[in-house]
Every structure is written in structure tokens, then in C-alpha cells.
Image (cartoon, rainbow, N blue to C red; front, top):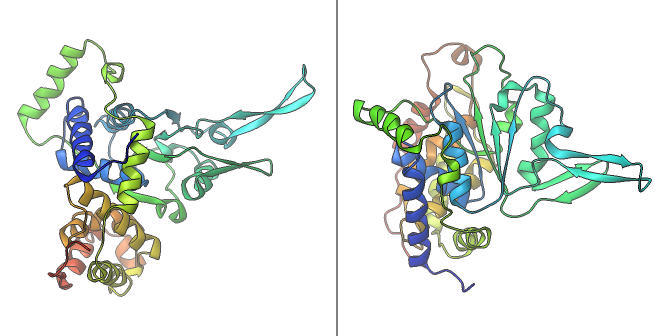
Length: 327
């Protein structure tokens, strides 16, 4: 297909958001952030209580983009080979053959990822960072795009295991669906269930894009969106500000700055711009950096400190650049 231009990119993004919004009742800004992260080829972690639509959102988004997708329901007895696959001895051929796991897909829905112990959670680390899988010493590349949409329940719920810091750092965004804001929206959820005549409406969704088109969208974000050096400096100051805050023990890693860069460019393209402005950065700062901070012990044990408020405080102290635009 021909190379996408800026207008076409915005049109496709608007269509994706419209279709997903027809099935997921909730914050429209949340849908925008999900799409921006996926265009940046980043992984997303949804954290909230059960029954708030996290799985429906992930499945609807996978279907509307036209990419292949797989699902892993994380349970306490899950094994790493259940995720990545293994080699099986075949009697008829007298040789081992590869049985691919569900990670061999474009979009992986990792449902209730913190229901499994750390050994199983860590099986996703190589997949998420390197976009490859090593099975019995043999490395297999994953198809592009590949990103994980993971859901987890709050860690205070029974039967959950906290995700290791190394895995948390590999999620580009940490989002929460939350409860719907009004009686009308709550009622709209019930109305849609009546009209679907089924609990899972994913089969009703028609794809807006295809695997090839989605890769084109990602390529445009990577190669077609300019970011001024002053905006890069702005991102760097925000990230470094997390490391010097008096309540923070471990600040955001350089990967946090790279993630903020990538998702800012994706959002600019979605808005019909081929350049990044400071508002793109500010919009995602809490979602990108919040889960990467480790508070000092005396503050982490209490509930009076919110890392998102810390990031708001840091961003408010840094003067954004004003003279930025196209190359």
C-alpha cells in the first residue's frame, strides 16, 4: 500500500477510537492513551478492581486494529512454557517440534497478570523487551507489531503477587479504567448489553485497520513526527526531577524518558500534527512515570503519598518550551 500521510493517519486513528468507543463505555481520554501507546509499540498495564471493563477494552482494541491476538489467563498453576511454548517429541517423525505459545501473536492480552507467581510473570520479560522468545536455547523473533495489554487486580486483593520492578518498568503506560462517572453512563452499559444479546460483543466488531496498516501507522510515528531539541530537554528535566525528589528513593530510568518521547510523538500524529508540543508530554507524564518510581520506605508504607501527585509537582516546577514546531 502507499505510504500513509498525516491526514490519513489521523482519519484511521479517529475511526479506531470511534469503533472502540461504541463498545467500551468509559473515559474517552483513556481510549486515546491506549491507542497512543500501541502506536508507540508500547505495552500497557491496566490496574483496577474486577468487572470494570479492562478485558473488554483490551479485546475490542485488538479486534478493531485487525491484528492477530492471543490471550493468557494467568492463574497460580500457570507455567512459563504455557506462555512462550516448548518443544515436543513427535513419535512419528522421531524429532522435537516447536509448539508455539500464545505470545506468538501481534497483541497479547495478559489477563490478571498478577495472579501468577513471579517466575511465570518473568517469562514475559524477554518478549516485552526484545520482541523475541528463547526456547531451549533457540531464539525466535516475534511478528511485528507485538505488544502486551495486561490487566491486574489491586495487590491488596487475595491471591495476587506484586509485579517485579523490572517488569513494571517495561510497561509504557500504567492506566486505570475506573468507575463510570454518571448515572447515564452506568445505564448505557446496561442498554448496550441488551442490544448485543450476549455478554461478549467482540465478534460484532468490524476491524478498521489491518496488520499492514497498523505497521504503517507505527512507522509514521517513528519516522514522520518531529520533536524539537527543546522538547527533548523538557522530557529530560522531568525524568531527572523524579530522581531528586525528597520522597522518592528510586526515580524513573532512562527507559522512562524514552517511553515519554515515543508516546508523545504518537499522540501528536493522532492529533494531526507532525511535531510534538509540550502538552503532548504533560498529558502522559503521570501514566508513563508513575509506576517507575519507588518511594522511600517511610512513605511507601503509608497511603498519604501519591506518586502521581509527585509527578504533577515536578512538572509544575519545570518551565515548558514555547518556541517549538515543525522542523
